[in-house]
Length: 95
Image 1 (tube, rainbow, N blue to C red):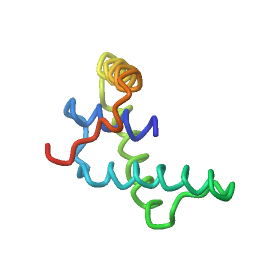
Image 2 (cartoon, one colour):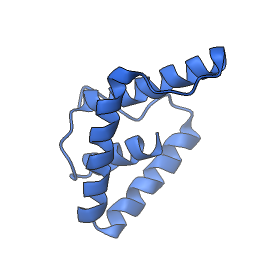
Image 3 (cartoon, one colour):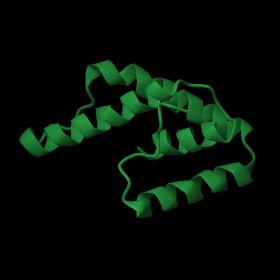
Image 4 (cartoon, helix red, strand yellow):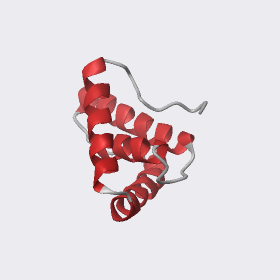
């Protein structure tokens, strides 16, 4: 999830153009994986989310290649703030 959320924060800073829904699909995939792991011990992403994860990994790779270090560090700070907040998700599909 770290890459998904950092990618989201970097995109919000102007580095990337993936649909917000793609980030949400990846987020839901992790939630489904965690639920399944608690139920039966199987740690496997749902097949239907793998393509979205691959796209977001590619986005993050390109963000790291193009975003200046201060933007990457700002995304890291935003991730820490989000994690400390107890909120369920930083991703909004309405913006």
